[in-house]
Image 1 (tube, rainbow, N blue to C red):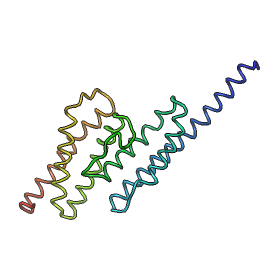
Image 2 (cartoon, helix red, strand yellow; image 1 turned 135 degrees about the vertical axis):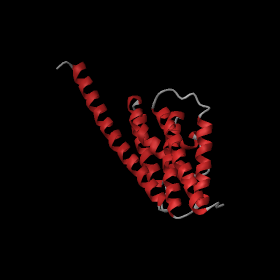
Image 3 (cartoon, rainbow, N blue to C red; image 1 turned 90 degrees about the horizontal axis):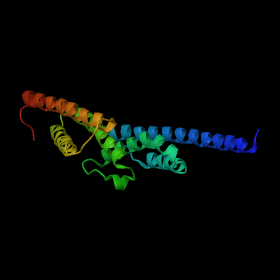
Length: 183
């Protein structure tokens, strides 16, 4: 084999090995963020493990610009977890160290977790929590309507927010009908 082809082969093999490491570490980061969210629903979770595993994936990918997109899903899941943990005080994209599109996708996904939290509150007859979450999601929806979201994953995620709002509104109406006005 020509020396130049041998060098190209070695470089490609090294790149592929790094790519596999980034994929594996991104899966770990995604899983850790999901575990943190589930724990937060139980009132137990924090983001330390998820943040550490995401940083490892980002460091591996940052050495190879072609690999950076592989980490996107894990970053978005981390944003979702961080926003859920911080509710009602959402961190900024700068604070989380992600790009705007990743941030917006994570914020939209966080609405799903907040909806779940509101549904759990309904089971506990915690009407104030339901109302607060509904108002918070309504504000997110209203704010995001000001963005020029083109057809893409963030747009699709944004579109699901109105369905989540309708679902929560139905819960609130049902609560009002069954239990009367609650503060």
